[in-house]
Image 1 (spheres, rainbow, N blue to C red):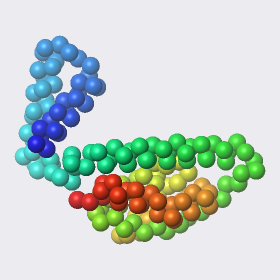
Image 2: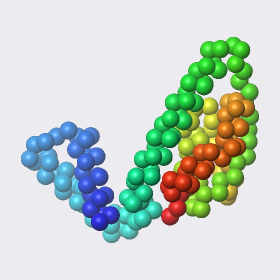
Image 3: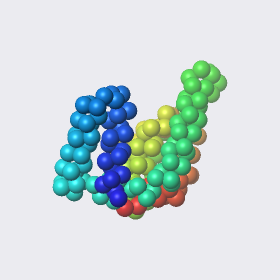
Image 4: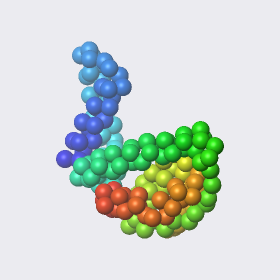
Amino acid sequence: MRTLFVAVLIFAFWILLSGHTGLLLLSLGIFSTLLTVFLGHRMRLIDRESYPIEKLPKLFRYYFFLGKEIIMANMDVIKRILKPGKSISPKVIDLTANQPSNLGKVIYANSITLTPGTVTMDVKADQLKVHALSKEAADDLASGRMAKVIHNSKADSS
């Protein structure tokens, strides 16, 4: 099932990028998709952690959460740049990444970096060193709200 899902996903991506619908090119696209999936399957690259299809509904909810966070952080950064009264107060904080898997820790660190005004500077074991543009952004991260959403999405379990 997982291999079939990966094949459909790769072919859909190929057709989206190429835009070709001629018989010869569609045949070549199908052949290259099958060859890629065959090689990936033989190399044991298609596994539960790489393609967690059973987690897709929860992952989509997390993507919507992350999209909202990115938009809100963008607006905050713009306000701080344009309003002289709103101060920029950079701060470096240490956060505990208590996700049960390395994938969860990577998702958490990358989610922080994707959010404007915050950057994950270092990851060591269960500690993240994060630079935040403002005290408010640092306090929001320290509250653990984003970490809880990642944990509840089960994106971090293997």
